Length: 131
Image (cartoon, rainbow, N blue to C red; front, side, top):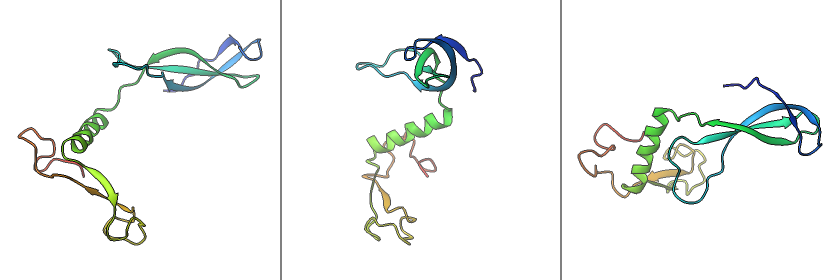
């Protein structure tokens, strides 16, 4: 969602009230400890039109991740934590990845400790899983 709001702000670098143009959104730095409840926020970054100094001016709730991405991330986390999914150098090309049909020229292959479902609600059950 593009920002069209530009502001006249006091620049901390050049010390003048100048036009500041919207530049980007940046996730706020995370503090150590437990994650805060509620949505995360992103800082709105504006840049001075005269000296190009960036500054934070305001924040807004972080846009929610797409449901599909979240489900895929949960599936990958489960596969890594429970089933031991990881990558290793391709044994056929020894990690080089040149003209290798076994790894598709990537140099890496997926290996698993177990491909068997870990229970009836396992997301990697028959017909489900990471492609």
